[in-house]
Amino acid sequence: MKVINLQFPNIYQSDQDHQFVLAVGYFDGLHLGHQAVIRRAQQIAEQRSLKLAVLTYRQSPASFYQDDASLKAPILPLPEKLKKFAEMQVDTVFLIDYSLAFGQQPAQTYVDHYLAKMGLAVLVAGFDHTYGSVKEKADMAHLPIYAKKRFEIVSVSEQDDSGGKISSTRIRSLIQSGKVSDANRLLGYDYRTIGRVVLGNQIGRTLGFPTANQQLIEPQLLPKAAVYAVRVKILTGQFAGKMLNGMASIGHNVTFGDNNPMTVEINLFDFYGNIYDETIAVDWIDYVRDQEKFDSVRGLVNKLHEDQSVIKKILAANSPV
Image 1 (tube, rainbow, N blue to C red):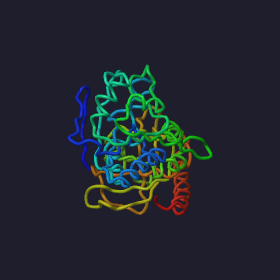
Image 2 (cartoon, rainbow, N blue to C red):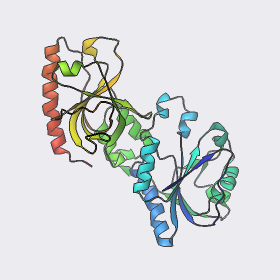
Image 3 (cartoon, rainbow, N blue to C red):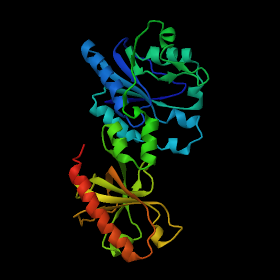
Image 4 (cartoon, rainbow, N blue to C red):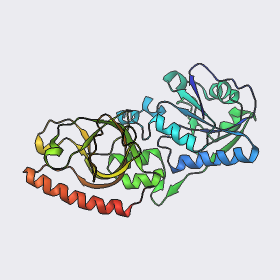
């Protein structure tokens, strides 16, 4: 897969007309709704013997205009998003470095300077896709006017379930409230964080529950502070490729003080290898309980044994996606 980086005001001038079917969007999380857009583009590309391309952004456009710091932490970090594009057999990714200057372009300028020069035959986007200046609020209904018959336009209808529209906003809310199993259903895969195992305070080891503390490599949305059932894949080192069950705690170790930093700690079941400094992927399977402050260490240990029993049952009933 070829990745073409673009930074405003630079443009990409294709050396061949009508060679791409282009799926367009930020695709935060690359959820089932986004997958429907790319699948539709893929179908058209196969039918017409054209190349499949994606136009997306390095940063969240919404993070430039909404007062919500969490928007800078994506559901799916860019390196993982690119891997998923490759798995979906995308030939080319046009990766735009989003900026306020880029977002201030009139819709007609954006279409003329970017889309029309990319060599696309067909543009495919979700029904609610917008483009051009934020003030214009140009939508898919207006795109034929700006396109001037230089390329075809396909709008993919809303994807929903019993809870409503499948959207990144909805999934972000589910993750932030700890409802990771519901988020996974809308994503079409298990929500995953990737990070390096760093040295912690060793409290878990003294309790009989040694933990791998995960430090994120890329900014990424985290579930709320709580205890979760997880699966962990070791990505580097001696144990690379090994998949393990475990229980994870996100929180401040409140039983041991009130001013501890936030940590992501994973107790791996039936594993005793040294994975410090290695990279691990944590798949968040299900919420178990909120963080609690215990009156005694014994009370905490008893609860951890209960958690472990509950989590083993959860993971036994949930095969990997």
